[in-house]
Length: 201
Figure 1 (cartoon, helix red, strand yellow):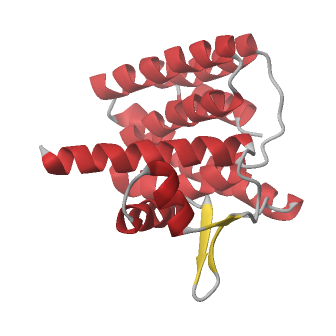
Figure 2: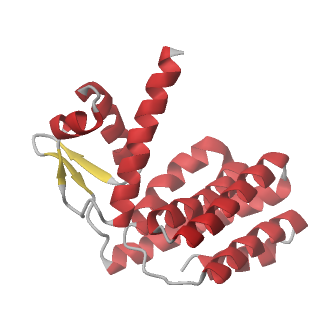
C-alpha cells in the first residue's frame, strides 16, 4: 500500500510538471532545482530526483552533469521537421501492427482518450487538450508495439508538442482522430495511414 502511495504521489508531481511545461508556464531552458521543487510539493529531494529523471526520459527536461536540470529548449524548425518524420514512422508501424491484432484494450483506451480530448476542448485547457491528444496516439502505439514501442515514441512526441502550433477546431481534431481509429477497426491500412498523415503535420 505504501509503495502504491509513493508511486501515486510521484506521478501526480510528474503530471503537474508535464502540464506546466506543455502550457509554457515553465519556459524553455528554465532551471529547476530539487530543493525548490521538494519544498513546493512537500516531498523529499529523492522523490523529486526520480520525477526529474522520468521527465528527462520523456524529452521534457535536460539533465546535465554539474549544470543541473532545465526545461528542454524548443526544437528549431529543421529538428521539428525531423521529429514529425520520426513520429510518423513509428505511428505508421504501430497502425500496421494494430490492424493485424485488434483488441478490446485499444477500443477502451482510445475511446477514453477521445472523451478526454472533447472535454478538454470544452474547458479550454490547452495543456489538457495536448495530453489527451497524445493519449489517443499512445493507445495506438501501445496496441501496435507494446511498451517498448511507447518508450521509443514518447520522447519524440513530447519534444514535438512543446512548440506545436497547428491550430484545429475541436470538431476537426476529434474527426481526425476518429478517422484513424475507425480505419484501424475496419482493417483498412491505407485509409488509416492517410488519416494519420492528415493529423500529424
